[in-house]
Image 1 (tube, rainbow, N blue to C red):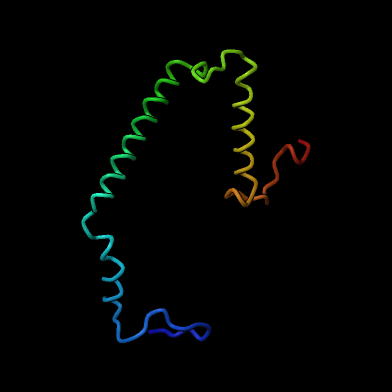
Image 2 (tube, helix red, strand yellow):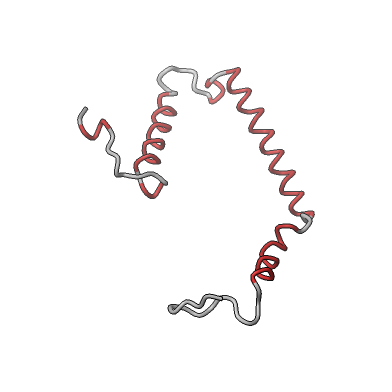
Length: 107
């Protein structure tokens, strides 16, 4: 095996590549436990609730949020646009600041 000059080996002893692969794959190929099934069931229930909520919102409108005046739901749009812009430009949010926007250039 390759030995790095900068740190100690992570795997010691007479271990083959196939044994390392088996050790890594063993938890992935094992049968799921009851806790996994419980978590999966809870996740499916949450997904179902989300689908029902979004469907109700699409058929009813944003009045469901209690925003029955035209001016009030402008806050939701502004909030969404601000976060979308942050995620596009800021490196901490997964974006890059190397691409300037048209607003920053004054165009």
